[in-house]
Figure 1 (tube, one colour):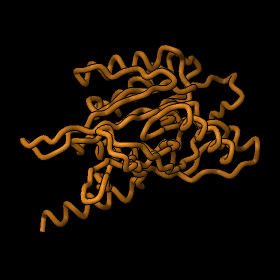
Figure 2: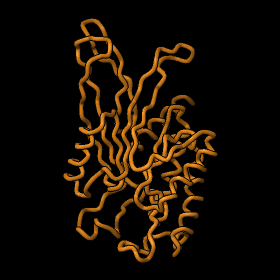
Figure 3: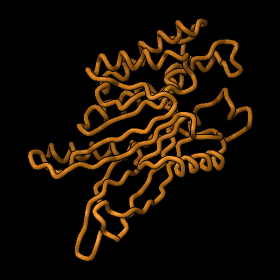
Length: 276
């Protein structure tokens, strides 16, 4: 998020929160780095990049202000948060303090996920009043495991994670380079059918809520790497049918990376159609 920077897309983030809040099945994970908690001694400290509200010399006082603002931004979806990753731009206790306050708002625990986490979501299948079972989606989420800033090295490190951890969706952050990668995975049905079922694994690297560019005072400048345009993706689960044997099918839920603007336009059209 990096809400302390002048380039933080406050309005865009608010619209994203509203989208999640309006979706009864919508959930979210805070991927870390809510602020840029740097003091004047940091090699990348740039006072011109920091919003006037956050030009505070004492980092602990800065964190208090960030906590207050982050709580205001995230409270509408506190009950839909699966957890908060720590990132690398905060003092040690920041995430713990934030998750405690979000838990109070949500009325349930919003966990501090640490540096990485495996999360399992169980989805109810069927219609209201006519349940037909449930489906489990496994998510691996990490802030730092996105690897190098250079695209090839970053992808290689993330592919190593796919080998090390078995999941359906892999979420990364840290590098601010928005990327998505799809890899098929074949497995056998649990009831003994020898017909393999192919499920899609999705790997997604989160960007930062900055408009329209970021990293003007960091490694990107130092190494003369290309700037990254702001782009926002969400993970959408789609129900699909696959053949298990001749004449028989079963459904699977497949994750897809979808541009946020596409989803917003689709919802807008649905509301217009409903109104007509």
